[in-house]
Image (cartoon, rainbow, N blue to C red; front, side, top):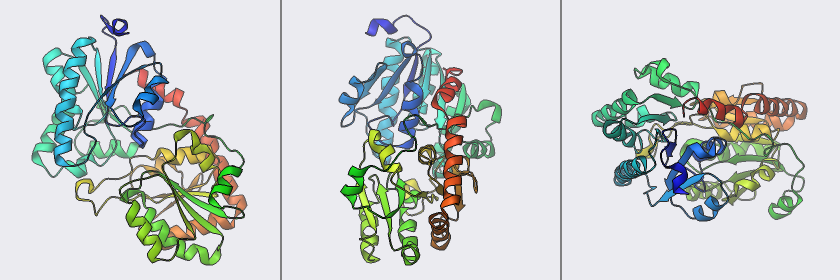
Length: 391
């Protein structure tokens, strides 16, 4: 198989810390776009993770797996950078790579910079918002990020909000190519509720509020749990389903117990991608009141750059509630496909949930608009065509 890639100047190598079976919005975006690109022209370099061997066997494009640290500590990030530089040098030379695509600005971007200096290889850098906030207080990090960006062929932000962040940081808009997340509107589509899941979770005659995503502070699960105290006074049959796992799980479970809401909150744990449409279709309203991270030192200032889960819920015909932080206003159109709220106000979150649960016609109108928008504006094939222009 290696010979297939030898001798071509047109091979693009994507190096990313996020790729399935690792679960994240970034992982989903890279997989959904790159699997639609010409397979003979792309190679993926990603961390080895539990289940990656089985995942890779199903794919027809080339995926190289290496043991690369996936933690968020300073030491892990430094090791990621070093390993990615070494692997980039090796595989760029081995496969005569024509262009590198650096999936993260600090842990992968320097690999593109080094390969350009040594081999003259062009590279792109992908950003998701908040990098300038989280790392901008360090002179060394600021210098490195700007050096990586200035030497790059293009900077690839995931939303208009992220573009504005980098414009304010002094990067000209002409250097940027916006590639937003998309959604597979064939895979994610409105359908009846799964009887198996209704039985599994005891959801007969329940109104389901749902969040899908990693259990991180910026996703706002805690504020939904707090808002639930108010919601169940008007809708005692309401259930909040939290789909996913993450660092906040124990804190959220403790909060649920402290508020005596264990009969109204369900933690599903990890759910396979192929099962997600069944979960989205269980809910009456999708809610993710995203906000900036405050309490986690290493992630302070982190925010939702876009929010692919809003598109997935919309494609399933579900109204969405988002926080007025980051780039979620591009994923959710206030009053059209959902509602945008103050993510730090449990009253606003509660009122938005109650408004949608109480008015079926309004909920249907929002869900229908979300479905139409997913089909017309966020199809993965269209987004992949934009990517082909910068391969």
